Image (cartoon, rainbow over all chains, first blue to last red):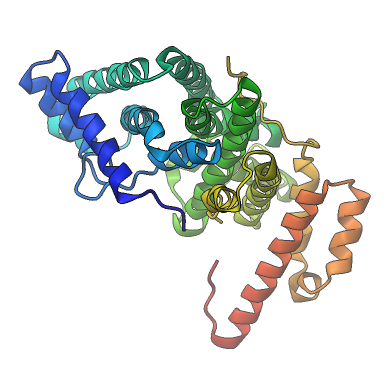
Length: 299
Length: 78
């Protein structure tokens, strides 16, 4: 299992706390930001999982620098992703603790603040402009994927390739960002940063598809999934199965197609294998290679 | 600047072919899950890349184990 050293975890938390303390906001707004960052698993919660800080630090070390060098990038990713997670819930019409506590408008306003706070952390780091540019490019890529996810339907011009590209844009770009931020913090060359970004993109797709498998296997039959026909691989497969099986191809599927989870798992495992093959070009030392490989232990 | 999100899968994955093989695999029962040669032949006929073939074979083995587990105690785990 890949993990960060306790001292570096403490530095990431401290970095977020410092920027939050010094931010030119009043106490009421700061309270909303703390509430968002304190939701379960988030960076200021009782037990933060450091899920976004981890790839930044692993890639920073693999690219030849000390873990501490990754702290601003890791802290920024944790803050930025809290905002995107809340927004994702709200865009999907799902219940979100922050919106329940503060109301929808204030929750949205807190997300705006978190996005600005994350960028501020990046801009004030070493090579801050480069780090911020990486985030802005990846973030725009992610929201493009989100837009497609929200506005397109499986089967209506969205095939397997389209669904995979939407996943890559939405999820792959964010892990790509995290990995590239780590490499950039280590002052890796542009070429090496690009390689880390490629690795991160495949890592992100693998992780998202692994989540999609769980949603099919353990999530039962969420009627919203079928009503919206989200443009994800499992739904494209299901719609295609219904088309192959049914005399009435216009009928909407009401359950996952046989083999849906298995298909998504196979695609995820393919991406995982492709990411694994990139690792020898990313890191010279064996421990870093193992750490990078450990990030892919999600299937 | 980042690209618009197209992933670089080298060589490009033939997802239609993978879906087709998975459909046949899950519909084929235990005999097909045991048949590595069938999978290799189908993958070769569809010109799938090595990573996709390896993933499909890993899936085949995983499903085979699951079927074995089913036969023993009736539980089904992924």
